[in-house]
Structure formats: structure tokens, C-alpha cells
Length: 216
Image 1 (tube, rainbow, N blue to C red):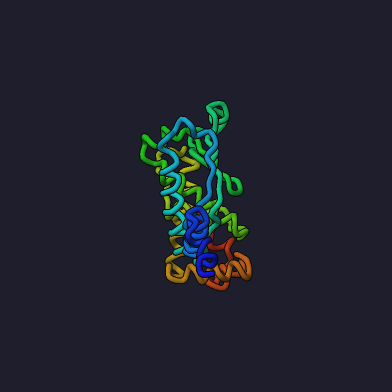
Image 2 (image 1 turned 90 degrees about the vertical axis):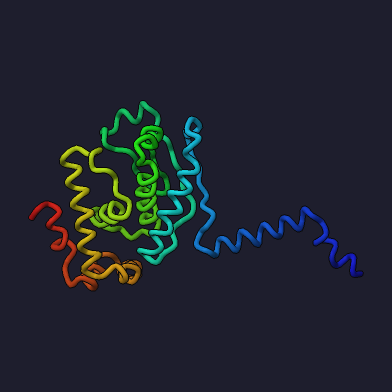
């Protein structure tokens, strides 16, 4: 009777399966420690997967600290073909749509030392969109640029000023409410929407606060 009761544990295959399930459940409860990702078109870039993983983890930890929320753990990286890349403005290194990040010239970004920060920047956008917060572009771009800046020299003059303005606007907002209050702010955003949360925490309307982006 005793042998029948412990047979399943002595079976190495079944034991490994149950241990695997326990490990996965444990890691999942620790904030999405197992990101699920697919890289399309990255076969020629063996350095890409480990950088994607490390960039994801860095952006994930930062996002959790800033917002108090654990981001989604599934995403897709699509390396753009040279044909598609040539149709984009020269300063576009990557962009995101939904849970997909479209990456341009990963080897060039890697050689310039900005691949990791570029990916982390885009992960921030993916995380924000997954919560449906509908943040204004100056705030979302400013937040992503503040924590994971993209070197300004890749932008033409007009675009560079816009990104710098967004980053500066977010910095001013962060200092106004206090960085320690950012998670509480995003909790209010989750409950009441951005405009209402912005007014509650700053005492100003969002459209008035962001005027200095255009130098007004």
C-alpha cells in the first residue's frame, strides 16, 4: 500500500513535471519573471536574444518601481527588412504597436552602443499601452525618454527638440508631485483616467501644464 502511494513521486518524469510547474508558479508570482517573446527576422543577429531579455528585465523593474504595476510578459520583436527600413525617416531606430516592437538595423544599434536603451525605451511604450491608460504623447514619450533616453544626435533638429521638451516636461511633473508619489498617481490614473488624475495631483489642467513643450 505504501509503495502504491509513493510510486508517482519515484517516477522521474512525473516528478520533474511537478517540480517544473511549482517553479513556474513561483517565478510567475514574483512579478512576471518569465517573459515570453518571439523574435522575427533576427536569425542573422545572434547577439539579439540576450540583449532583448536584459533590456526587458531592466525596463520591467523600472516600470514597476515608477508605476507600481507589473507589466505584461508577452511581446514580439520584429526586425525590419532593409526595404521597409528605407521607407522610414533616417532617425527612427524602433517603434512599437501593441505588444510588438519593430526594430531597425540591430547590428548598427549594437555597434553604436544604443541597442539596449532603444529596446528598453520601446518596452516602456508596450507596457503603458497594455494598461490602456491613454497617456498624452508628451507624457508617455517624456517618461520613456527620461528613464531610457535615446541619444539626441540621431534626431533631426525639429524632432530632437520635441523629445527633449517631452523629457523636460515629465521631469518637471515628477518633481512637482514627488517621485515617491508616482505609483499613487498611476493608481489614480487606473481608477479615474489621466486628465482627472493629473488635475488631482498637480492642481493644473494637463493642456496648460504642457505648454512649455512648444516654448510658450
